[in-house]
Length: 195
Image (cartoon, rainbow, N blue to C red; front, top):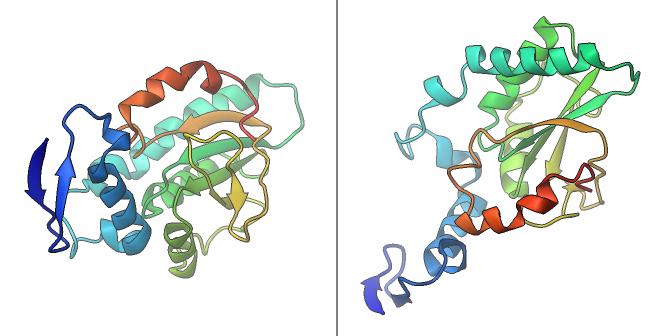
């Protein structure tokens, strides 16, 4: 064990190098940071480490929407399909993706489930009017969801939310933030019912 001085407090914290990242104190600090900062964590005033022009641009959103369109076009179902975006963060990509879905004529055929583990993040992106051009409950839903906890999906009021017709999952910001131990849970991910 090695002693480090925690940057945000005057307390000394012990870190164990042999602990999985998601079981470490650093993981808890990072989760607390995003829970407390909300969308400010993605602000250019806060950090310059989020490459919005790479991760959240319209061209990437359109490319993914074209894949979704191919899936929808092959289906004979008349049901509205869900597209689950895990880790919405600032909501920038979600907005671009909704525009791409509209441009391809997919709204009404698919609904974007904009999820994050932080209710603060989701509430802030709603309050900022990120999706003012779209209809909540029709074009998209905001859902609190921890990808590591099956059945954890809840609307912002805390009511269980069913993820029962998901045809695609977007992990734009999640893959770089998930703990490595998620690989142990892959068999669960292959099942179709996330709710």
